[in-house]
Image (cartoon, rainbow, N blue to C red):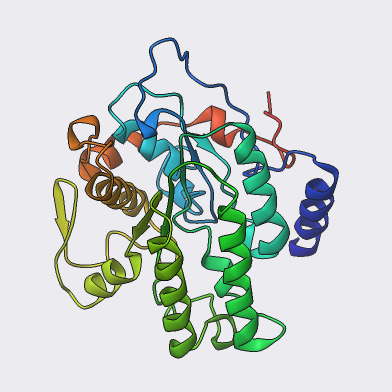
Length: 289
């Protein structure tokens, strides 16, 4: 099955064919009265966390980070567009470039790429630790193509994830160098918002309280699935609140009054509510009827 998906993924990207989770089959909301906020036309890039991998086990259909952000952005905005895919790890080089290429066509006012860089560093790499460092540079070059605010994160230590073997995880020294590079890249670009996701994850694992919007958490128990890599529906809502909280904290043109940072309430709302425009797609992104 993995080989089948890989062949179709690469062929689809090279031929410009829409791939499920790469090109969204959705229409924007009417924009006659859309605000001038950076949140007015958001596009989500990224991998399986943003794509809501596994959330269908506890909800009526797959729920994605874009669905959460749509509800948390209270200012008038176009529907949040979703380019994320659970296939990202199959070929970060090609899929990552394709996501950026397709996202730019939408002329986003802001790009949320909170887990976009993850598989450039994680996964088995030919070339060892140096390949991980080169991968991060490739991902950052892709994000440099945007001329709008971009949200990225420092990479958390996910070495205890069930399905990540030792050869798929960067060494601690490599991960530190990667995060230093992401930090340096972000600080050199005023339009980049950096989310310290590594600190949030480390604090939660140590039992230290983390505030996400209107809620406080001190454990990953409700937030991570059994594989200890992907988030639950509640974890997805917390991630959305953390992302938007950091945006409002770092950007003066985004105010808290324009956001609804209530992850507990949002999680309750989206459970049991399918998202047909984002999830009901065949392998190549076409809706099933």
